[in-house]
Length: 92
Image (spheres, rainbow, N blue to C red):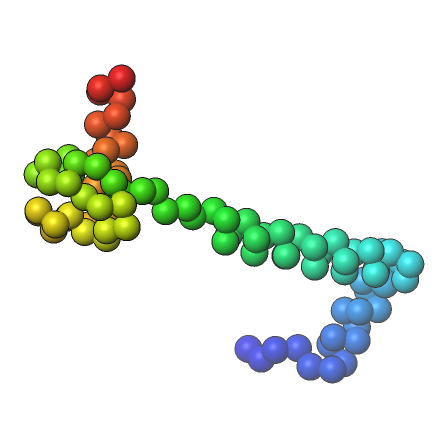
């Protein structure tokens, strides 16, 4: 299956103009562009790295704030943060 060519795109454009009207097409395109821009910004802001600073829940070694691994047991920062989050409700 191939992508639509010139004549097919022209037919689609005519159908869209009949459905939405020529005056609403720029508004529709602008809102679609703005939605895509907001989606990209949301994807960038979505993941915030949590600090790992403090004792390792696995081996109790001190972990520096910018560390990616525990110097004592070698667990990753993601594992350490997940374990701290899992243990947090117990201690509260």
